[in-house]
Image (tube, rainbow, N blue to C red; front, side, top):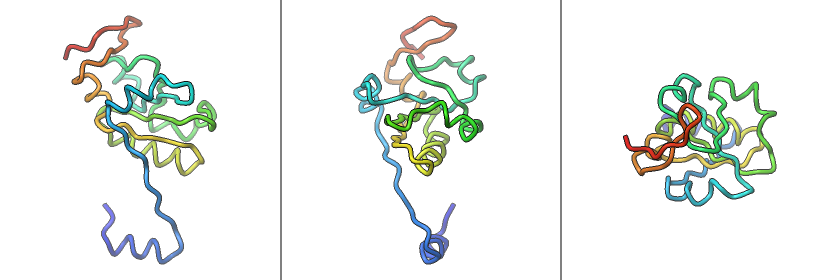
Length: 130
């Protein structure tokens, strides 16, 4: 957590603050299949094995993202998801600091499932009914 004083000190030292674009699940549904986007899920493999994933997503755990940046194209917008949105915001910040165009998906996988989005589990596409 950064206090207002911490933020003032940060800015006074010459550092810059940038904003991360956030999109809703409804916007994600519209943008995910565009040719100029890549969907990235930053949950751990164990979470994907247990809960499934959104179809056509790339999985790179947020803890491994820095070492695997070369797997993501710089010329496309990266739509970043996790379970609820916290790790995807961290990952989005990291990607943005490295020159990527990113959008963090509010609500993440959990919101996707709650809204009836399809999931892939055990190589079978299923309609989420949880």
